[in-house]
Length: 122
Image 1: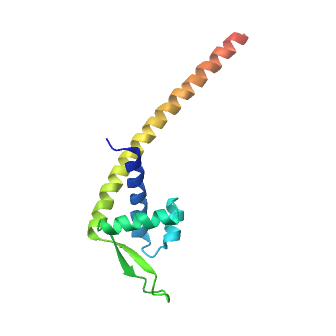
Image 2: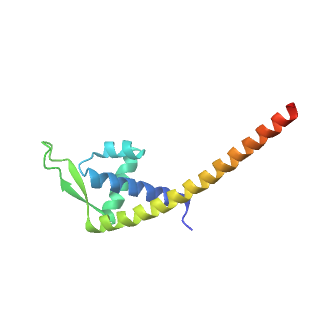
Image 3: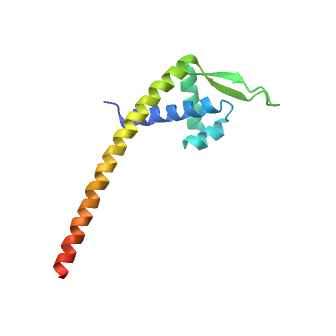
C-alpha cells in the first residue's frame, strides 16, 4: 500500500511535470508558488526529476540572462507523466466518490433530524 507521503510526493511530481509540459521556462519560484511548496522544496523536486531522467535542463533561449534554464520533459518524462495522470485521476475519482457518499449520508441525516424536529412540534 502506498503511504500518504508517497502519494503526496507523486502528486507534487505530477503537478510539476504538468506545469513544465505547458511552460518549460517557468522559474523555480513560479513553480513553487503554483504547486504550493517552498523554493527549496521545488529545487529538491526538480533535482529528483532530473536525476530520474524525467526532466532535462535546456537553455532559456529568449532570456538575456543565460543562467536561466528551461525544464524540458524527456520522452521518459512524458511516459511517466501519462502513468501519473492515470494514477492521479483514479485516486481523485475514488476520493470524490467517498466524499459524495458522505455528503449524501449527512444530507439524509439532516433531513431525518428536521422531520423528527417538526414532528415533535406538532
